[in-house]
Amino acid sequence: MPAILDIPSARKNPNARRAWLPAVTRGFMNRCPACGTGELFHSYLEFNKKCPHCREELHHHRIHSIPCFISFFLIGHLLIPLALMVDMMFEPQLWVHFALWVPLTSILGLLLLPRVKGAMLSLQWAFCMHGFEYSALCDPAKPRKN
Ligand SMILES: [Zn+2]
Image (cartoon, rainbow, N blue to C red):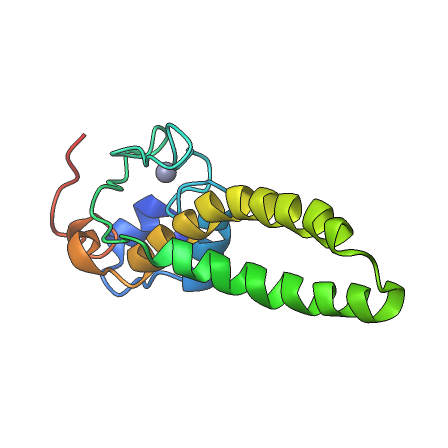
């Protein structure tokens, strides 16, 4: 594992880099990209200002509406082929399509949106984008404020 997972050793090593894949995985699972323990969200789509476990600052993100676009992109690429396959195989009536795909699309959207948002925050954190370059792991010389 890279030094990124251990914050104190990363502070000592100015060349420590953040591994983006573990960070994005943690963000997708609603966990802090730095420690993997604290939760990212304090409500459905509202991030904590700091990680409740390691105090890593999380408020630097510039996410805007890209998680919505990514979620709909993923859901569309998953459900449209499924809907076409079901239609070709079983030829159900139109009301069956509505009864099946409308709730499935809504539920998947609600489940996927916070996960994609967490993954986007973690990606920005991993690449030290926006204000994340001032956190302790990107700039070890700067003391961390608690
Ligand atoms: Zn943390």
